[in-house]
Every structure is written in structure tokens, then in C-alpha cells.
Length: 264
Image (cartoon, rainbow, N blue to C red; front, top):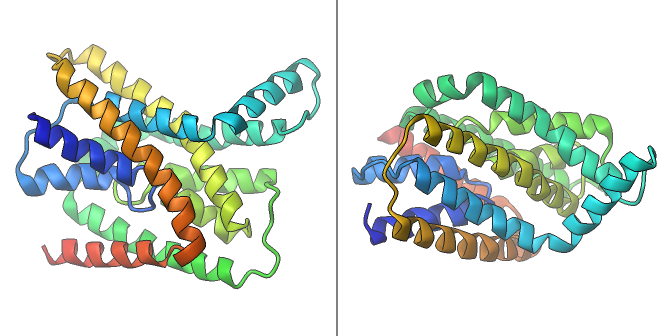
């Protein structure tokens, strides 16, 4: 893989990981449509770590408080500060972890076709539009997440293992549908991404251990840097953009892309 392909794929990962448009779908589509060689497991690891570093840096202050409150909630066996949110992130990650471990091979073999991506992009794009409409007409959005909310969002997140669904898209959709405010739904979705990206990177590293490959360190370094920088600015851009135009531009993009892929 040359530097041009590295930059393009790293930008795709960085830009689409936190936008509700599915990074996995775009990382599958671009090489297929461009007839590029597979980017390799090592590349997948570093771009995931790049996006992870971006969201951790963006939410560093909140994460620091969550970690401290989580620790004291264990030692004191009671709710401390924002420890409930920390536990919610942990519990909300369980469904996607279990589904990933049980069905990873099936998804890799059977659900990475352009047809599957087209249908999931279209269907879950329309569902995002419905959630956006519901949120806009919700007079009493909530800022507090209950355990039923966490369970629902967690199971919905597991669906995002199917390429084209979008992890951020489905978790934001779920949050809006259960009545969370848009800001709370987005924050919870992005914080949920941290353990999920970590788990994903660990699974890829395990695959690398079982399938040793040669490593081009220049490609990996460039991939990490580009993915990290583009991810960080995407988070900043996305949150500011939502205050101005909402989610509908992403709904339109998904519907158009889904229709075009079905036409192919």
C-alpha cells in the first residue's frame, strides 16, 4: 500500500468513525471500487488507535472524572459523582463485545458485500431520520440515562457490527428514540466508542498474532497520525454542525449512497 492509499484510507477512517455514516462500510467500499489491495491488519490496528486517541483527548476531562468516580464507587460501594455514567459505559459495551466474539467470523465472511452495505446504509439512515424527527418534536428531552436506556442502546450498538449500520449512527439513533437530548445522546455514543474501539483493536491484534504479516512502519505511522488528526477535527466539526443543521444532511447522504449502491 503506497502513501496515497494510506492517507486516503486513514482519512476515511478518521472522518467516518464518528460521523453517522459507517467507517467500516467506507473502508470496504473504497478498496473494492478502486481495486486496491487489502490494507492489512496492522493498518487496521493503527487507524483504530488513531481514532481512539482522538476521542480520548477530546473527552479527556470527562474521562478523568469518570475514572476517579468509578474507582471510588467500587471502594465505597455506592454511587459517587458520575460513577453511574461510567458503569453505564461499561454495561453498554457488553452486548457488542459478546456479539463480536460469537459472530465475528460469520460477519467477516457473509456480511461484507456491497449489497449488505447498501441495505444497511439505507435502512438505518432512514431510522436515523426518524429519530432526528422525533427528537426535534420531543418537548421534554432527558439528560439522565437509566439502566433500561443503557441496555437498549447497548443492544442497538451490537447491530453496528454489520457494515453500513454505523456505530455512532445507531447509538445516537437509539439515544434519541428513548428521549435523550441530542447532546446527551451524542456524548454517550462517543464515550461508548472508547471501550468498543479498544476491543476492536484487541481483536485485530489477536488476528495479527495468528496471521503474522510484514510491517511497513512508515505506512503505520502516517496512518495513525492522519486518522488521529482527522478524527479529532471530525468530532469538533460534527458537534458544532449539529447545532446548526441537525442530522438530516447525514440522513440524505446515507439514503443517496444506499440507492446508488443498490443501482450498482
